[in-house]
Amino acid sequence: MAFTEEEYGQDMRFSTNLQFTPLNKPGIITKKENLEQAIHNRMRTFKGELVWNANYGSDLPELIGYPMTDTNKALARLYFIDALMRDPRIKEIESITTTYDKTKNILYINSSITTIISSEPLNLVYPFFLWGEKRCTFQ
Image (cartoon, rainbow, N blue to C red; front, side, top):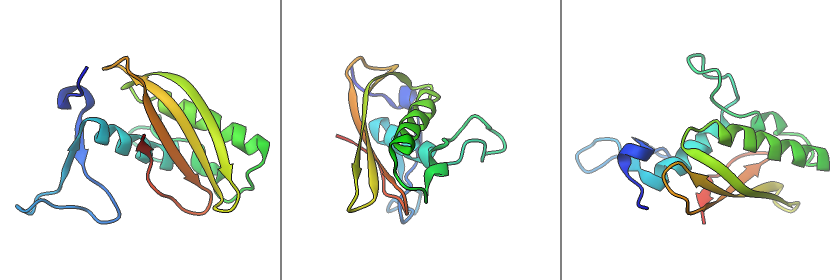
């Protein structure tokens, strides 16, 4: 089943630099790319940080600066699941694993999700940087 703008919504493209079209309008993203950006934004926003939507966000940022112990890995996984399932476009998390890269101090959260639109799983890799951040991507 194909992704449609109506079902996944659209948003302004955010990156390190706000991107504009040749007509000097902000770039718009749709479909799977919009879902990637939405998940990234949700994970890096403290739950309750948005006054108008206290349910938006994640507890994941609370782990920034702490050592990646087994307990904190389990918490990161739990926080990721909790935040992901609050996105109305996500139907189910089929699998989730974590891999910690000690040399880069990054916890990779790998998940396979299905959406309300398609029964085909999407593989999402979210790099949780304990001292900074990068973007998540579907693989």
